[in-house]
Length: 329
Image (cartoon, rainbow, N blue to C red):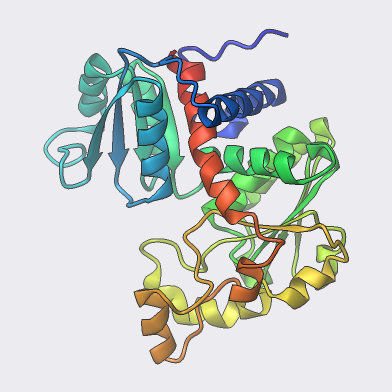
């Protein structure tokens, strides 16, 4: 079946069919091959893109900028200090203005309603670079990475997300796994139970695709995992919660013992990055001096042959390029 995403926004994987997600993965793979071969078709020549960032980023900003520049587009970057959105100008008015100037808008910030309203009022495709409850461009890159490193189709894979199972990455994984028929398990403390509405939505889709959405605090759920995934224990703006999160989540830290519990020698470790895996960052050092080990994964695992985190990071650019090309080229 032909897929046409031109003019569509990319706000959540829940808005796409499995066939549309498959199309984006195949397009990502094709664009990756072409980039490595030095082939640039300038499929975005003459297009103008604006990036709205209320949260800082390394991978998301660089991936969008390189993806656009590779294919001939022009990019404007606006952070919260260089835009009047929500301060002297309403979100609706800002969206309508930007829609007159630009062919596409990326947003990275807090509330999902903001990215949805940008799409509602701008009249151009809007792409979700991260919100408090979703991170669809990351999951697209993760799915591509799984296909590159695992020797079985996605719908025969098991993904276990360890740690803070009610954060945006855990929810984004629920959506992605539900859509692609993947077995997903959120492995974390019962005190951090995921949002029931989100789980119900994901489970309803999984029932149609053959996937599974489970939650467990037992290490038994690790057995048979193809992917072990984790994220930092406190997201941006949650630093005050770190002492309590360390207490709750240390039993779910990704260690080599946890990897061995999967009983799968080919299991891969993935992380959206940045990761606390050693004490070479200012934040990790400061919290260690206060008596808290904030590492969600050990350095041994992060640097092991199981880890594919840098292939995964590279794939952010290829999959984002595919999303932009499919929606505005």
